[in-house]
Amino acid sequence: MAGEATKALSNDVLWGGGRSPFSISYGKMMMWFFLVSDALTFSGLLTAYGFVRHSTTEAWPIGEEVFRALPFLHGSYPLIYVALMTAILIFSSVTMVLAVEAGHRMDKKGVIKWLFLTVLGGAFFVGSQAWEWSHFIHGGGGYITTSDGAKYWVQNDAHDTHDPANAEGFHLLRAEPGHYLTGERIDGAEAMALWNDRVAYVDGANMDRNEYGPAQYANFFFFITGFHGFHVFSGVVINLIVLLMVIKGVFHRRGHYEMVEKAGLYWHFVDLVWVFVFTFFYLL
Amino acid sequence: MERDDIIEYSLDAHHSEEAGRKIRRKIWMVTLLLAVVTTIEVAVGAYWKEWFPGSWQLVKWTFVVLTLIKAGYIVAVFMHLGDERRNIRAIILLPYALFILYLVWIAIWESQYIHWVWNTYF
Image 1 (cartoon, each protein chain N blue to C red):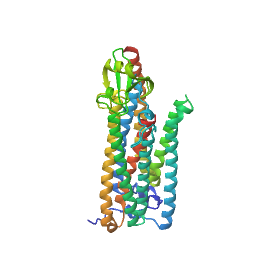
Image 2: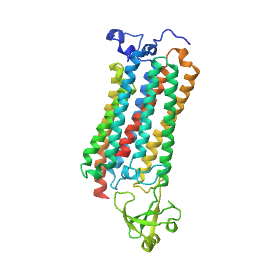
Image 3: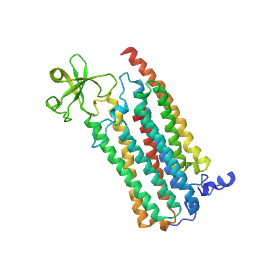
């Protein structure tokens, strides 16, 4: 890349005053400083997640078992939806860097095209996140614990969690420790007897308890993906404002598109955080 | 609001059509790399335990390494940090890395101890 940063300048000139020794503008440097502090926040969250997961004595849920649903489809697709979300976010990061590149050539049409696609990708990601949350909160049927302390998954064809025992296709699965919605199938009168013997019925997820595992699992899911989702949402709003300013020709008159670059830094950072959330929350 | 005491570095960032083609090719190469790495991660995460039971610990470390590679490309190429001066790279990355390495180390250390306490006394 061309620019001030590639010029060979002696330290005397760089640090001699009257210029930035880093050869970047004030706005870009402040964006970087903000991103460093934001990165510390996300690192803190993910480290706290690792701390809890590492110190707990309960079985921790397995990502590819919990996240294996797709909208409008039945069946098991482990991690496919999260992978799709990751791909969308990475792709919108690519369109953003292409918008920045177009800006460096003062190509207003190019900036508009790529920035519009970036906003679209971001909006799609936020929508996917909403679906993921909804699915996580509603759960896959829930489990009961019986008076002898055994745990059974509750299943029926209608995904009814209000009165599952009277729904079509009601059956139970004898839960295996550390796994989600797996085990030997129990039908008919035996299943009904176990259902009537229940001491607790946990379905879906909230801040107190969830069907997947320890309470902290859902808490960290809500907090980490929620905090990240809010970043994506605000990024989409910022990109949209910048897009409108580009269309109005504000930056063309200014003579450079650095605002696109600064918004781009924030947007890439959001993508960067998701790469880590994807690994440490879903994969490991 | 014209100020003549501020050097406008942004004007220097402009490049030609020729240079733009090169930059765009680099962007698409990095895109391909990120897509391939993510595909490998998902395939391994979803099916490795079925295909090769055991060796999961090794897979986890592979994930961490692949993630750091992806992060490196995003920061260096997409965020253009690789094109900036060495001093700005250093003041952004070094303090952060130092602090986070310490945080991760202390978290792993302490969580092992707490795991032991819970197993032993509760």
